[in-house]
Amino acid sequence: MKIGVLALQGAVREHAQAIQACGAEAIVVKKAGDLAELDGLVLPGGESTAMRRLIDRAELLEPLREFADSGKPMFGTCAGLVLLAKEIDGQEAAHLGVMDMTVARNSFGRQVDSFEADLDIVGLDAPFPAVFIRAPHIVRAGEGVEVLCEYEGRIVLARSGAFLGCSFHPELTGDHRLMQLFLGMVENRELLPTAAHYSKI
Ligand SMILES: NC(=O)CC[C@H](N)C(=O)O
Image 1: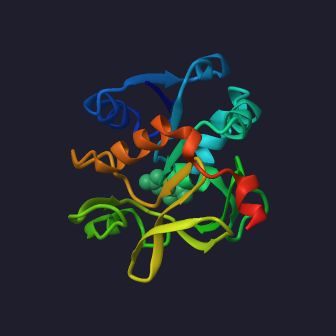
Image 2: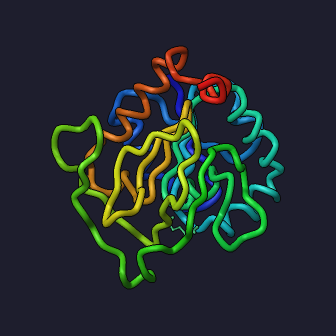
């Protein structure tokens, strides 16, 4: 299994290590050609506005949208969640705009307010240690978006078809269960509900 990590900015190395620790191959993605032959893609945390500038500079916006349209799974963490969202609170335009949700940025305070919390996640039998760094949260989960975790009444992890998105940094604690969950989505891609399926419900 080949899993890409968008490597323009942010927490790239830690995701690559997590992917490898789970037995998959990690591919660094810096240009459109790097997306070929991937089975799934991680959009890491960092700064979404800076990442968007670099995406535009690398002419990656359309190739990333095409990748999303192809049904191959994408996992957005923190800034990556902001990249996936259809709507961003207080901002006119979205970035990839592929996952039907609205996110609010910097929901849990400033950089100095970074913190770690143990989260109860649907499908995991023990709490997951999560690091929040100027984290966004999901203020509106659209049709077909399955909420997998809330923290302090805010949605911080959700899945929709082939998209998985979380507010926090799952790659920083050495607990790879969320990466395993994502790799499971990649492995069982044909079983994932599609957007078309949701619109019929
Ligand atoms: N750690 C992070 O990825 C922070 C995300 C950042 N606040 C943003 O909105 O892009």
